[in-house]
Image (cartoon, rainbow, N blue to C red):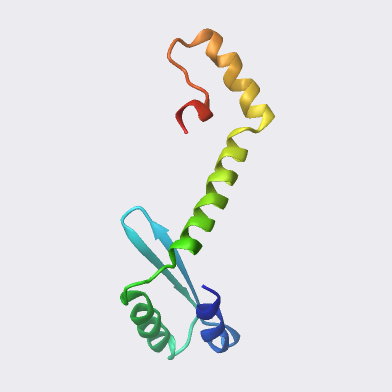
Length: 101
């Protein structure tokens, strides 16, 4: 994403911005700003994300490892964990987050 940000820096200075999110059904593109150049920005971003993305396997695995670690750390928040443990005493089929992760 860094190269994308670099490429569109001038547009952001002119008040034109975009954001690309990964949604459940695919990419979600957000645009904001007011200029006659918005269509040019739109076409450029769509073209960029229409091309197949090649991701290096090592890079993918590094990102995956980082996200899994963050996910597991987030599941182990003491307040949430204590509440879940208390709930296990009163609910029959309740699993701890790490039991199903």
